[in-house]
Length: 210
Image 1 (cartoon, helix red, strand yellow):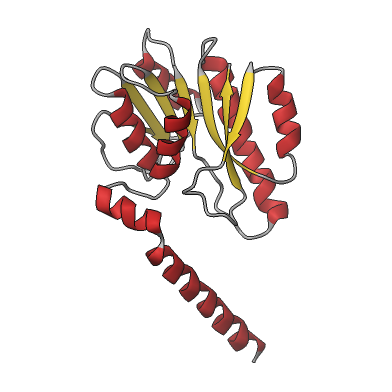
Image 2: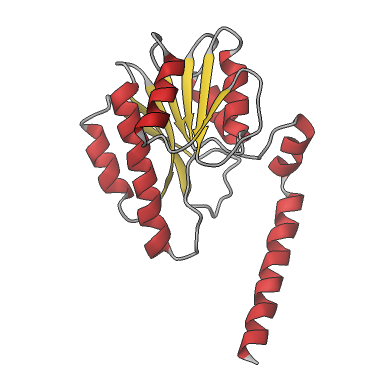
């Protein structure tokens, strides 16, 4: 009996989530405007407020799949810019985007990314990476912090002075300690909670200038 009740509750929860998702303004706008996910509007707002990505720039998008941030950034850098996206999962082709599948921590994949960068400098590093959440913050939060540290390491290694890291973070254990560590390595850090982020979500976006 307990199993049946649990499954029924899960079904109700899933149905409620699906209804909320389908009724979501940003989901509808993403479908209307041809974006792959509602997350596109998060980067659009962040860039409207910071003006960090513009035509002709070189941008690396870590953990890019399904590609909504790459869609936005690819349009922003235009044909004169370079947008390099990478993910361990496959991603469908996008205009003005070079996709490299694999783990950017591996030398082979890192070298492929940097070969695409070539003699240019990386102006902006993007990270909308997040773990597959379990609902257990004791598991999910450390995994998220690990991903953030990977993005930070990549940014510190490849950004010039004045370059920017735009990164998703989960508020919770370890986040403020990580931010304190970043303060000695970046000249400026600010937080933005875009309107497209659901109010109950723990996600926030840090914009760090090297």
